[in-house]
Amino acid sequence: MKERITALRKEVDDFRITGADELEHFRIAYLSKKGEISTLFEGFRNVPPGEKKETGQLLNELKQFATDKYSDFRERLTMAESEPSGIDLTMPAYPFGEGTRHPISIVRNEIIDIFSRIGFTVSEGPEIEDDNHVFTMLNFASDHPARDMQDTFYIEKKSGSESDPHDVLLRTHTSSVQVRVMETQQPPIRTISPGRVFRNEAVSARAHCIFHQVEGLYISENVSFADLKQTLLYFAVELFGENVSIRLRPSFFPFTEPSAEMDISCNICDGKGCNVCKGTGWLELLGCGMVDPNVLEACGIDSVKYSGYAFGMGIERAAMLKYGINDLRLYFENDVRFIDQFRTEIL
Ligand code: PHE
Image 1 (cartoon, rainbow, N blue to C red):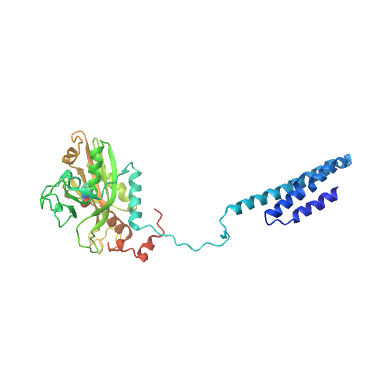
Image 2: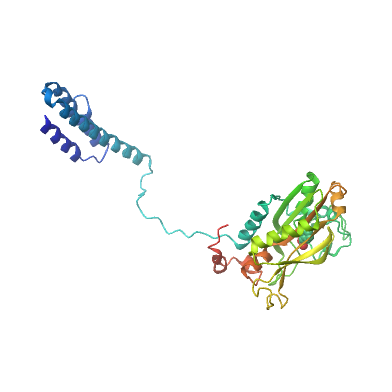
Protein backbone atom coordinates (compact mmCIF):
# COMPACT_ATOMS: atom_id res chain seq x y z
CA MET A 1 0.00 0.00 0.00
CA LYS A 2 2.75 2.40 0.98
CA GLU A 3 4.58 1.92 -2.34
CA ARG A 4 1.35 2.54 -4.20
CA ILE A 5 0.84 5.80 -2.30
CA THR A 6 4.39 6.97 -3.06
CA ALA A 7 4.04 6.09 -6.73
CA LEU A 8 0.69 7.86 -6.95
CA ARG A 9 2.07 10.94 -5.29
CA LYS A 10 4.80 11.13 -7.92
CA GLU A 11 2.20 10.65 -10.64
CA VAL A 12 0.04 13.45 -9.25
CA ASP A 13 3.09 15.67 -9.01
CA ASP A 14 4.14 14.98 -12.59
CA PHE A 15 0.69 15.42 -14.08
CA ARG A 16 0.93 18.42 -16.42
CA ILE A 17 -2.12 20.64 -16.42
CA THR A 18 -2.18 23.42 -18.98
CA GLY A 19 -5.88 23.93 -19.59
CA ALA A 20 -9.44 23.23 -18.50
CA ASP A 21 -9.61 19.79 -20.20
CA GLU A 22 -6.55 18.46 -18.42
CA LEU A 23 -7.78 19.88 -15.16
CA GLU A 24 -11.00 17.87 -15.57
CA HIS A 25 -9.01 14.72 -16.42
CA PHE A 26 -6.93 15.25 -13.32
CA ARG A 27 -10.05 15.58 -11.18
CA ILE A 28 -11.63 12.43 -12.59
CA ALA A 29 -8.42 10.41 -12.37
CA TYR A 30 -7.55 11.25 -8.77
CA LEU A 31 -10.21 13.13 -6.89
CA SER A 32 -13.57 11.76 -8.09
CA LYS A 33 -15.43 9.02 -6.22
CA LYS A 34 -14.06 6.41 -8.59
CA GLY A 35 -10.62 8.03 -8.76
CA GLU A 36 -7.34 6.47 -7.65
CA ILE A 37 -7.22 8.10 -4.27
CA SER A 38 -10.76 7.04 -3.31
CA THR A 39 -9.87 3.52 -4.36
CA LEU A 40 -6.86 3.58 -2.03
CA PHE A 41 -9.09 4.81 0.80
CA GLU A 42 -11.38 1.84 0.17
CA GLY A 43 -8.37 -0.52 0.35
CA PHE A 44 -7.39 1.06 3.68
CA ARG A 45 -9.75 -1.37 5.43
CA ASN A 46 -7.36 -4.23 4.63
CA VAL A 47 -4.20 -2.57 5.95
CA PRO A 48 -2.84 -4.52 8.97
CA PRO A 49 -3.61 -2.70 12.29
CA GLY A 50 0.12 -2.04 12.98
CA GLU A 51 0.50 -0.05 9.75
CA LYS A 52 -2.79 1.80 9.86
CA LYS A 53 -1.48 4.95 11.55
CA GLU A 54 1.42 5.59 9.19
CA THR A 55 -0.47 4.58 6.05
CA GLY A 56 -3.48 6.71 7.05
CA GLN A 57 -1.24 9.73 7.43
CA LEU A 58 0.43 9.22 4.04
CA LEU A 59 -2.94 8.71 2.41
CA ASN A 60 -4.36 11.93 3.90
CA GLU A 61 -1.28 13.85 2.79
CA LEU A 62 -1.66 12.53 -0.74
CA LYS A 63 -5.28 13.57 -0.85
CA GLN A 64 -4.41 17.06 0.41
CA PHE A 65 -1.60 17.36 -2.13
CA ALA A 66 -3.86 16.47 -5.05
CA THR A 67 -6.69 18.72 -3.83
CA ASP A 68 -4.29 21.69 -3.46
CA LYS A 69 -2.87 21.14 -6.93
CA TYR A 70 -6.39 21.01 -8.34
CA SER A 71 -7.70 24.15 -6.61
CA ASP A 72 -4.51 26.13 -7.31
CA PHE A 73 -4.77 25.53 -10.98
CA ARG A 74 -8.50 26.13 -11.09
CA GLU A 75 -7.97 29.54 -9.48
CA ARG A 76 -5.30 30.46 -12.02
CA LEU A 77 -7.56 29.36 -14.82
CA THR A 78 -10.50 31.53 -13.71
CA MET A 79 -8.18 34.50 -13.28
CA ALA A 80 -6.80 34.04 -16.78
CA GLU A 81 -10.32 33.78 -18.18
CA SER A 82 -11.34 37.12 -16.69
CA GLU A 83 -8.39 38.95 -18.32
CA PRO A 84 -8.90 40.48 -21.71
CA SER A 85 -7.26 38.27 -24.28
CA GLY A 86 -4.19 39.42 -26.14
CA ILE A 87 -2.69 41.25 -23.15
CA ASP A 88 0.53 39.89 -21.78
CA LEU A 89 0.74 41.07 -18.22
CA THR A 90 4.31 39.93 -17.89
CA MET A 91 5.53 42.45 -20.50
CA PRO A 92 7.61 45.33 -19.07
CA ALA A 93 5.70 48.63 -19.05
CA TYR A 94 6.57 51.52 -21.37
CA PRO A 95 8.77 54.09 -19.61
CA PHE A 96 6.36 56.71 -18.32
CA GLY A 97 7.49 60.33 -17.93
CA GLU A 98 5.79 61.73 -14.87
CA GLY A 99 4.83 65.39 -15.05
CA THR A 100 5.86 67.99 -12.50
CA ARG A 101 3.79 70.50 -10.63
CA HIS A 102 4.07 74.07 -11.86
CA PRO A 103 6.08 76.24 -9.42
CA ILE A 104 3.00 78.45 -8.97
CA SER A 105 0.97 75.42 -7.83
CA ILE A 106 3.79 74.29 -5.55
CA VAL A 107 4.05 77.66 -3.81
CA ARG A 108 0.27 78.16 -3.70
CA ASN A 109 -0.17 74.76 -2.03
CA GLU A 110 2.61 75.53 0.39
CA ILE A 111 1.04 78.88 1.36
CA ILE A 112 -2.36 77.20 1.84
CA ASP A 113 -0.68 74.55 3.97
CA ILE A 114 1.10 77.12 6.15
CA PHE A 115 -2.09 79.06 6.88
CA SER A 116 -4.28 76.00 7.37
CA ARG A 117 -1.96 74.92 10.17
CA ILE A 118 -3.08 77.99 12.13
CA GLY A 119 -6.78 77.62 11.42
CA PHE A 120 -7.36 79.47 8.13
CA THR A 121 -9.88 78.00 5.71
CA VAL A 122 -9.75 78.42 1.92
CA SER A 123 -12.43 80.46 0.11
CA GLU A 124 -12.93 80.84 -3.59
CA GLY A 125 -14.97 83.24 -5.68
CA PRO A 126 -15.67 84.26 -9.29
CA GLU A 127 -12.97 85.63 -11.60
CA ILE A 128 -15.60 87.66 -13.46
CA GLU A 129 -16.84 90.08 -10.82
CA ASP A 130 -18.81 93.29 -10.44
CA ASP A 131 -17.37 96.67 -9.52
CA ASN A 132 -19.19 96.47 -6.20
CA HIS A 133 -17.18 93.50 -4.86
CA VAL A 134 -13.85 94.52 -6.36
CA PHE A 135 -13.96 98.26 -5.57
CA THR A 136 -17.03 99.90 -4.04
CA MET A 137 -17.45 97.71 -0.95
CA LEU A 138 -13.70 97.86 -0.42
CA ASN A 139 -13.87 101.60 0.08
CA PHE A 140 -12.37 102.63 -3.27
CA ALA A 141 -13.34 106.22 -4.09
CA SER A 142 -15.36 106.49 -7.30
CA ASP A 143 -12.48 108.33 -8.96
CA HIS A 144 -9.78 105.90 -7.77
CA PRO A 145 -7.27 105.27 -10.59
CA ALA A 146 -7.60 101.45 -10.25
CA ARG A 147 -11.12 101.85 -11.65
CA ASP A 148 -9.66 103.30 -14.82
CA MET A 149 -9.79 101.31 -18.06
CA GLN A 150 -6.01 101.58 -18.13
CA ASP A 151 -5.75 99.33 -15.07
CA THR A 152 -8.82 97.09 -15.16
CA PHE A 153 -10.28 94.82 -17.83
CA TYR A 154 -13.98 95.67 -18.18
CA ILE A 155 -16.38 93.19 -19.69
CA GLU A 156 -19.46 95.40 -19.49
CA LYS A 157 -19.70 99.06 -18.59
CA LYS A 158 -23.18 99.94 -17.39
CA SER A 159 -23.08 103.71 -17.62
CA GLY A 160 -20.56 105.13 -20.07
CA SER A 161 -17.23 106.04 -18.50
CA GLU A 162 -18.66 106.65 -15.00
CA SER A 163 -17.89 103.90 -12.50
CA ASP A 164 -21.00 101.95 -11.61
CA PRO A 165 -21.25 99.20 -8.93
CA HIS A 166 -22.93 97.02 -11.58
CA ASP A 167 -20.05 97.19 -14.04
CA VAL A 168 -18.78 93.72 -14.90
CA LEU A 169 -15.02 93.21 -14.90
CA LEU A 170 -12.18 90.74 -14.32
CA ARG A 171 -11.19 90.91 -10.66
CA THR A 172 -7.94 92.79 -10.06
CA HIS A 173 -7.40 91.16 -6.66
CA THR A 174 -8.93 88.34 -4.63
CA SER A 175 -10.04 90.80 -1.93
CA SER A 176 -13.39 90.47 -3.73
CA VAL A 177 -13.64 86.91 -2.38
CA GLN A 178 -13.19 88.24 1.14
CA VAL A 179 -16.04 90.70 0.59
CA ARG A 180 -18.21 87.75 -0.41
CA VAL A 181 -17.18 85.87 2.74
CA MET A 182 -17.92 88.88 4.99
CA GLU A 183 -21.32 89.38 3.33
CA THR A 184 -22.41 85.87 4.21
CA GLN A 185 -20.59 85.05 7.48
CA GLN A 186 -20.28 86.67 10.86
CA PRO A 187 -16.98 86.72 12.82
CA PRO A 188 -14.87 84.97 13.82
CA ILE A 189 -13.67 84.73 10.22
CA ARG A 190 -10.27 83.31 9.37
CA THR A 191 -9.82 82.61 5.68
CA ILE A 192 -7.44 82.83 2.75
CA SER A 193 -8.44 83.22 -0.89
CA PRO A 194 -6.06 81.96 -3.56
CA GLY A 195 -6.88 82.64 -7.19
CA ARG A 196 -6.16 84.24 -10.56
CA VAL A 197 -6.35 88.00 -10.96
CA PHE A 198 -6.18 90.26 -14.00
CA ARG A 199 -4.67 93.69 -14.55
CA ASN A 200 -4.34 95.71 -17.70
CA GLU A 201 -0.54 95.83 -17.73
CA ALA A 202 2.02 95.45 -20.49
CA VAL A 203 3.78 92.09 -20.17
CA SER A 204 7.40 92.41 -19.02
CA ALA A 205 9.91 90.61 -16.80
CA ARG A 206 8.29 92.25 -13.77
CA ALA A 207 4.58 92.51 -14.70
CA HIS A 208 1.93 90.37 -16.35
CA CYS A 209 -1.74 90.87 -17.18
CA ILE A 210 -2.64 87.60 -15.41
CA PHE A 211 -1.17 86.49 -12.14
CA HIS A 212 -2.07 84.66 -8.95
CA GLN A 213 -2.71 85.93 -5.47
CA VAL A 214 -3.33 84.64 -2.00
CA GLU A 215 -5.11 87.10 0.24
CA GLY A 216 -5.89 86.51 3.91
CA LEU A 217 -8.51 87.87 6.30
CA TYR A 218 -8.96 87.52 10.04
CA ILE A 219 -11.85 89.17 11.87
CA SER A 220 -12.71 88.69 15.50
CA GLU A 221 -12.91 90.65 18.75
CA ASN A 222 -9.74 92.53 19.78
CA VAL A 223 -7.65 91.71 16.72
CA SER A 224 -4.62 93.98 16.72
CA PHE A 225 -1.77 95.00 14.46
CA ALA A 226 0.50 92.88 16.67
CA ASP A 227 -1.54 89.81 15.71
CA LEU A 228 -1.02 90.70 12.07
CA LYS A 229 2.71 91.12 12.46
CA GLN A 230 3.12 87.88 14.39
CA THR A 231 1.11 85.93 11.81
CA LEU A 232 3.18 87.37 8.96
CA LEU A 233 6.43 86.55 10.74
CA TYR A 234 5.26 82.96 11.25
CA PHE A 235 4.34 82.79 7.56
CA ALA A 236 7.67 84.19 6.33
CA VAL A 237 9.67 81.79 8.49
CA GLU A 238 7.62 78.81 7.28
CA LEU A 239 7.97 79.76 3.61
CA PHE A 240 11.54 81.07 3.49
CA GLY A 241 13.24 79.43 6.46
CA GLU A 242 14.10 80.45 9.99
CA ASN A 243 16.84 82.90 9.02
CA VAL A 244 14.44 85.31 7.34
CA SER A 245 13.62 88.69 8.90
CA ILE A 246 10.61 90.85 8.06
CA ARG A 247 10.00 94.58 8.16
CA LEU A 248 6.81 96.58 7.75
CA ARG A 249 6.75 99.91 5.92
CA PRO A 250 3.77 102.30 6.11
CA SER A 251 1.67 102.24 2.95
CA PHE A 252 -1.83 102.93 1.71
CA PHE A 253 -4.74 100.76 0.56
CA PRO A 254 -8.35 102.02 0.45
CA PHE A 255 -9.60 98.98 2.41
CA THR A 256 -7.09 98.94 5.29
CA GLU A 257 -6.14 101.51 7.89
CA PRO A 258 -3.38 101.60 8.93
CA SER A 259 -1.76 99.86 5.94
CA ALA A 260 1.72 98.50 5.43
CA GLU A 261 3.91 96.69 2.99
CA MET A 262 6.01 93.81 4.21
CA ASP A 263 9.57 93.16 3.05
CA ILE A 264 11.63 90.07 3.74
CA SER A 265 15.39 90.12 4.16
CA CYS A 266 17.12 89.37 0.85
CA ASN A 267 17.87 85.64 0.80
CA ILE A 268 20.53 86.07 -1.89
CA CYS A 269 22.90 88.38 0.02
CA ASP A 270 21.51 87.69 3.53
CA GLY A 271 20.54 91.32 3.88
CA LYS A 272 23.97 92.74 3.06
CA GLY A 273 22.86 94.33 -0.21
CA CYS A 274 23.17 92.95 -3.75
CA ASN A 275 21.80 93.72 -7.21
CA VAL A 276 18.64 91.65 -6.65
CA CYS A 277 17.63 93.75 -3.63
CA LYS A 278 19.19 96.82 -5.27
CA GLY A 279 21.59 97.22 -2.38
CA THR A 280 18.82 97.60 0.22
CA GLY A 281 18.99 94.12 1.76
CA TRP A 282 15.17 93.87 1.56
CA LEU A 283 12.65 92.45 -0.93
CA GLU A 284 9.02 93.51 -1.07
CA LEU A 285 6.59 90.61 -0.59
CA LEU A 286 3.06 91.68 0.36
CA GLY A 287 0.53 94.35 1.33
CA CYS A 288 -1.39 94.28 4.59
CA GLY A 289 -3.24 96.28 7.20
CA MET A 290 -6.16 96.50 9.60
CA VAL A 291 -9.51 96.17 7.80
CA ASP A 292 -11.04 99.65 7.43
CA PRO A 293 -14.23 99.94 9.54
CA ASN A 294 -16.02 101.23 6.39
CA VAL A 295 -15.41 97.85 4.76
CA LEU A 296 -16.75 95.93 7.77
CA GLU A 297 -19.89 98.10 7.88
CA ALA A 298 -20.46 97.79 4.11
CA CYS A 299 -20.46 94.01 4.58
CA GLY A 300 -22.82 94.07 7.58
CA ILE A 301 -20.23 93.47 10.32
CA ASP A 302 -20.32 95.54 13.53
CA SER A 303 -17.11 97.60 13.38
CA VAL A 304 -17.34 98.60 17.05
CA LYS A 305 -17.42 95.02 18.29
CA TYR A 306 -15.07 93.52 15.70
CA SER A 307 -11.72 94.35 14.16
CA GLY A 308 -9.58 92.44 11.72
CA TYR A 309 -6.49 92.32 9.59
CA ALA A 310 -5.97 91.51 5.93
CA PHE A 311 -2.98 90.81 3.75
CA GLY A 312 -2.42 89.92 0.13
CA MET A 313 0.46 88.76 -2.03
CA GLY A 314 1.29 87.67 -5.54
CA ILE A 315 2.20 83.99 -5.73
CA GLU A 316 4.51 84.65 -8.71
CA ARG A 317 6.38 87.14 -6.56
CA ALA A 318 6.63 84.76 -3.58
CA ALA A 319 7.91 81.98 -5.88
CA MET A 320 10.44 84.36 -7.47
CA LEU A 321 11.85 85.17 -4.06
CA LYS A 322 11.82 81.57 -2.94
CA TYR A 323 13.51 80.10 -6.01
CA GLY A 324 15.46 83.09 -7.33
CA ILE A 325 13.44 83.32 -10.57
CA ASN A 326 14.16 86.58 -12.37
CA ASP A 327 11.58 86.80 -15.15
CA LEU A 328 7.82 86.57 -14.61
CA ARG A 329 7.21 85.48 -18.20
CA LEU A 330 8.86 82.11 -17.49
CA TYR A 331 5.78 81.07 -15.50
CA PHE A 332 3.50 81.35 -18.51
CA GLU A 333 5.68 79.97 -21.28
CA ASN A 334 5.51 76.35 -20.09
CA ASP A 335 9.02 75.61 -21.30
CA VAL A 336 9.80 72.16 -19.89
CA ARG A 337 13.41 73.16 -19.29
CA PHE A 338 12.06 75.61 -16.71
CA ILE A 339 9.20 73.51 -15.31
CA ASP A 340 11.39 70.40 -15.00
CA GLN A 341 13.62 72.11 -12.47
CA PHE A 342 10.86 71.75 -9.88
CA ARG A 343 10.74 67.97 -10.22
CA THR A 344 12.03 67.29 -6.74
CA GLU A 345 9.39 69.43 -5.04
CA ILE A 346 6.62 67.36 -3.48
CA LEU A 347 3.67 69.61 -2.77
N1 PHE B 1 -5.50 93.66 -2.45
C1 PHE B 1 -4.17 94.18 -2.41
C2 PHE B 1 -3.53 94.04 -3.78
O1 PHE B 1 -4.06 93.38 -4.62
C3 PHE B 1 -3.31 93.47 -1.40
C4 PHE B 1 -3.75 93.69 0.01
C5 PHE B 1 -4.65 92.83 0.58
C6 PHE B 1 -3.29 94.75 0.74
C7 PHE B 1 -5.07 93.02 1.87
C8 PHE B 1 -3.69 94.98 2.01
C9 PHE B 1 -4.58 94.10 2.59
O2 PHE B 1 -2.51 94.60 -4.04
